[in-house]
Length: 238
Image (cartoon, rainbow, N blue to C red; front, side):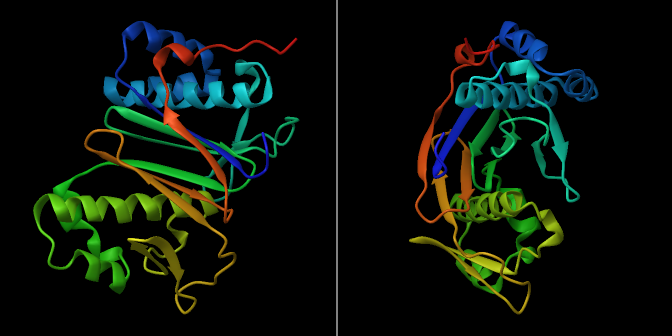
């Protein structure tokens, strides 16, 4: 997998129960324990689907057996491959929402977010946006406002997930312009470490928006829908 290549896949987390059972076996004991703690079945299935998709993608990219992947978490909660793995330079990110999951892997910083287009959310948290982004929402109503809000929200989430800073970085310390799509940093609110970023959006999932953030100015992005049948156990390459 080349340095500038990014693989992005999204997958329905509401497949036949047989697929979920097969994916569950792919996870390590810690992941299975976390899955078991979800109270509601859709949330449990989303967790299982996202982690099975991640393991399959990592193995397809490297030839490593699916069950051998081990993960660690940074100080700010960003997951990463365990340093002991030979392919630990790979980076990844996963996201899930009602009925869908997404995963991206690359050899540069990468973040992905997928969200339901929700009218109620658009009115609840818009105050965390930058003044410019609030201006983009002003005057919009109904479905148009919900779509614009969700585009901004997924882009922001994808970016802070890629940097690993999470909500440590104020969401009004950077702004997105949507058409054309670009990011602007506000150094007076938060230091700018690296401005080399590329972003991708898709509305291919009905009722959802997906955004990808990549720390590379011209990445080669391979993006598509994954099928339940292709997510499965991979053995060691011969």
